[in-house]
Image (cartoon, rainbow, N blue to C red; front, side, top):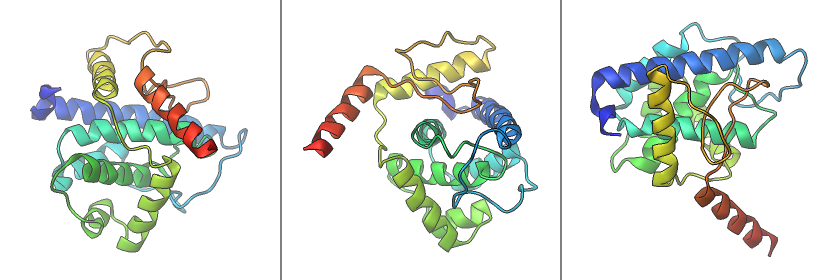
Length: 206
C-alpha cells in the first residue's frame, strides 16, 4: 500500500481508525452494565481528556515509525480483542492499547525504532507502565506478531474501501475490523493464519 506514504492518505487513515475506535469504545461503555468487563493494566481510572484522533495524530507525529505500522497496529488490536473477549475496547483503555500496539508494531516491522521510554513520553505515561503494557499486550496476543503479506493487503483493501465510502462485504475468507452487534473487533483468519494457529495448537498439545 504505497499510498500510505502520502500525508493525505495517512490523515484519512488516522481519521477513519479514530472514528471506528471511538464508536466501538462508546458502545462498549454502554454495554458495561450488561456485560462483565475485566479490568486490566490498560484500564485508566478516568477517561483521558485527549480525543482518540488527537492521540493518534500525536503518535503519528512523534513516533516516526513507518506508515505500515499503523496497519499492523490495527491488526494487532483486532487479534487482541478476539483473543481477549473479556477485555473489549472502551474509553478507559483505548489510548493505552493504541500506544502499545503501535510500539509493538514498530519493533516488529521497522529496522530502527524508539525505545519504551520514548514511547512512554509520547503516550503520556511512565516508562514502568509502558513496560507492563507491552508485556501484557504480547501475552494477550499469544505472541502472535507475524502478519503475512496476504493478511496485510486484505486489511489495506478493507481500509481503502471504507475510506472511499464503499463498505465491503464481510465473509469468512476475509480479515476485517468492523463493528459487530457486540461492539467488539472481530477477526476472520485467512487460510494461512488459520493453518498456522492449528500447527501451534498441535505442537502445544504434544
